[in-house]
Length: 126
Image 1 (tube, one colour):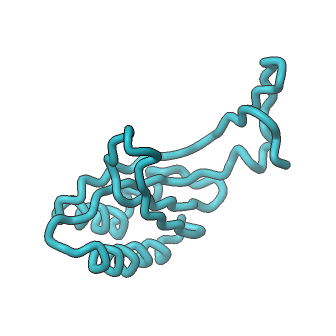
Image 2 (image 1 turned 135 degrees about the vertical axis):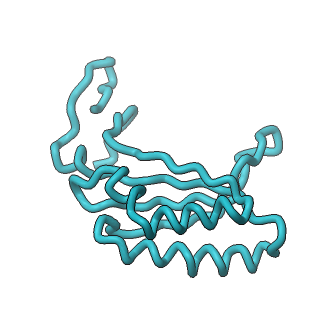
Image 3 (image 1 turned 90 degrees about the vertical axis):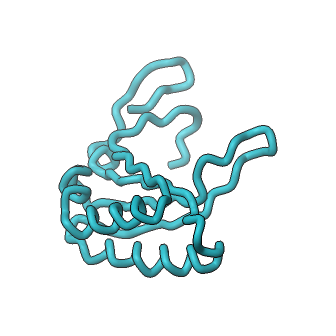
């Protein structure tokens, strides 16, 4: 859904509405250096590309926006799903559950969110 400059609502084109992704955030494990954590997470996260539902992954180290803001997470992984695939179809797969479970076992406090339909506010970039 798009909110126009005068507050009117308009639906996005159907092609953009079917794009969905999972967003996973977590902290660095306490027992690994920052470099070791990055190497481990890159290697282990790449395994998620084996899932039929996954189109691509985008891994980002996050930082707080300013000194006045708390830093709750160290990493963000966007798992872009194939068109029409829901989050549960991916999260419920054994490979994803194992990966997510490993993050938990290492004390990384992972959180996974399904990001579906969006609302564009402001100018339309396209």
